[in-house]
Image 1 (cartoon, rainbow, N blue to C red):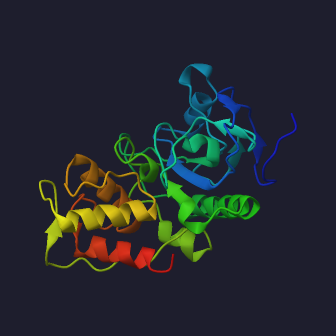
Image 2 (tube, rainbow, N blue to C red):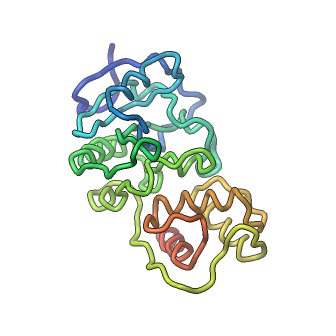
Image 3 (cartoon, helix red, strand yellow):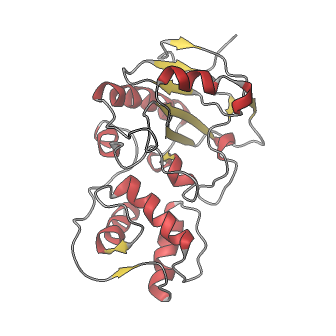
Length: 248
């Protein structure tokens, strides 16, 4: 097989769960996941099993070893339903990396430094070749806040940014003051929804802080304000969002 992709993988195993990318969309997103399984070997087997109907382009185990499963020119089945910057079918415009971690169901753990270094090395290679902008280096939870929480609040996005990958600002400290939460409505909620949508999140702008806004806010916190993920838009959350948007 003539593989298209990076020269970094330690091995290549073909997953059957692929198809052609749809339309003429260029690759513009690097999407990061955790495996949520008890071992990288089990994850690799699952991602290459036809019955699973899932796949990814790359898998990184806890030791930093990289396995390529899908040619980059092909559409891997890793994102599912979701959207970013108003566009759906994220699979057709993304490269997906599964990072082995047992996840919240099997004893969520820190991501080892050797593994994070592999994410940086592989991620930088991908975004350079495909000219992916920093704010499109995303969590699965960013594009599907109602369904996914991976790679989760322990994933070190700051480390990635410090090593040249992704978009990040230091989160504003948590303090007292006013906040928005489920049940609230009005101009302040409308403004919050507008800012989240402007950054890229899929959210309805209706001025009502319902379940969707709660989940999108939690997804934002899980990526950018990890010390407290509660779906409540406090001053720290809103100020951090403003800091991210300011240079864009």
